[in-house]
Amino acid sequence: MSEPTMENTEPQEGLEVLRPHKFDGIQEFDNPMPNWWLAILGTSIAFALGYWAVMHAYGPGIEPGKRLTEEMALAAQEAAKRSGLLTDPLLWKMSQDQAVVNNGRAIYAVSCAPCHLPDLAGAIGPNLKDNLWVHGGNPMAILGIITEGVAAKGMPTWGPMLGRQKIAEVTAFILSYHKEGEPVLPAQPQAQAR
Ligand code: HEC
Picture (cartoon, rainbow, N blue to C red):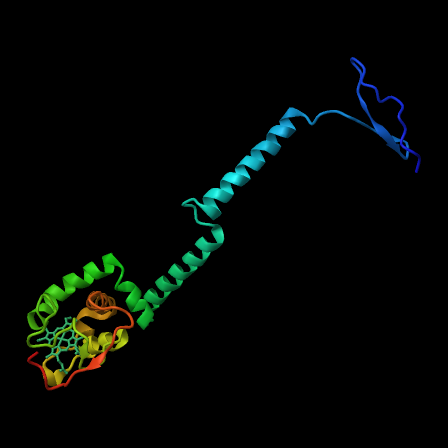
């Protein structure tokens, strides 16, 4: 390696300027970066700042990782719905889905309101909006009793009449009057006139 030299370093009109060092016989010009290169650099920095602000920090953009997680959860929900594999959490979720609840409300008005009353307050069948349950108040218990009915007490067996999808929807409609985690209190089976 040779010492940096100072030869040829004075800027001269019309001549390329050389940097004041030389390594292994190699010297560098002291030219500015070309404008097209600087433009790309500047644009990249501006884009990165904008992207960070919109997607990660302040903006409405959803960062791809988060969106993937959300889409996977949705897909799992859809798959569970299609496979008919209903669970308590899924039914609670459905009870917050306005479209599902509206379907359930329509089914309820036709098939259930005559006995449970349009406001769910209960008449021939028990109140469905309080915390007292004869057959258990968790979502799958409600879905089960609607599906199987209680022949001896006059609650019809809706399974064959409505099918899984509609029973899930009407269950979601009933759950929309309730909150996840609320107390579920046992009611006396005889106490039908509530
Ligand atoms: C012909 C009257 C009648 C109709 C129509 C009817 N039910 Fe019932 N339902 C009853 C009776 C009576 C009971 C009480 C059963 C018992 O005490 O064991 C009951 C019980 C229930 C229960 C259990 C309540 C509890 O406290 O555990 C649910 C949930 C329910 N019905 C939902 C429905 C839904 C949803 C529909 C419409 C798809 C419907 N019922 C239609 C009469 C009816």
